[in-house]
Image (tube, rainbow, N blue to C red; front, side, top):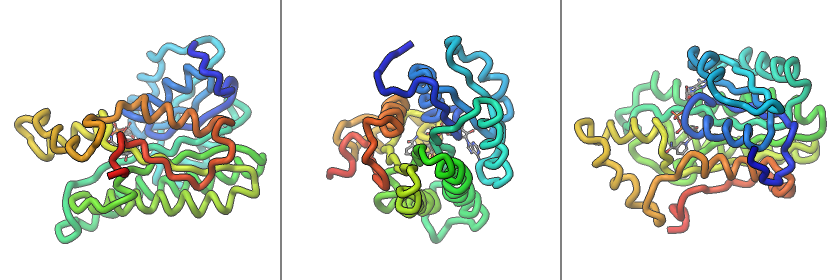
Length: 261
Ligand SMILES: NC(=O)c1ccc[n+]([C@@H]2O[C@H](COP(=O)([O-])OP(=O)(O)OC[C@H]3O[C@@H](n4cnc5c(N)ncnc54)[C@H](O)[C@@H]3O)[C@@H](O)[C@H]2O)c1
């Protein structure tokens, strides 16, 4: 067990989009911290896959299959965490999709609705239903996953950019509402991160040689590389800990210097 002295042992986290990428890295980081996890994904294979992840005796992981767009799924997820673990302390609202790489003039309405439903409505429902529970108990932290696309324009990923700006706005509004009730709400804004999402973006740019597309995405990053998923998970672990006790409404770029340019 990694003992990082963040004081999270025995707490309970809910992580959406836990099967892959950044969510999966957050799950592994929580296991290392001794945090129990309701690991949520829309992928029905997830429940079986989760059984193959080694966990120490003092940590319990429970799979939840559902779509973050659906209100009922959120209500069931909160109930499931409380039934199984008897408490819920943290939410990592991470599930998201990139949608088509198209500008507004060519963006299909159905694609717009789908991206906004998962990336924005899903975050709203988490803030509402998990936030209600955390505020009733008078403590807890919600970390939303936005993007550097929530901090500036991305001409070719129209709905993604819109949805991530919405995540930042919702984070700030919810932080102000929940602060007197003992709940902190923050957002992280990763730059391109080495997950399936970037592999999809690389294939969209260069279908025949996706690896060759990587320099196109790294050229604007002062550190000259993608983030690794565990570098985002580390910031999540810090933000939910008491080390970050006076941070709320804070938008944290995790971006190798992108937003400093
Ligand atoms: N990878 C990047 O470059 C990058 C950069 C900035 C922000 N982000 C954000 O980080 C988050 C995670 O991205 P990732 O790169 O790990 O993506 P990923 O595609 O590797 O993983 C996303 C996970 O979310 C799950 N998911 C998708 N739709 C869902 C739904 N409706 N309900 C529940 N689960 C659902 C998927 O099954 C998958 O397991 C997203 O919000 C993304 O926008 C990613």
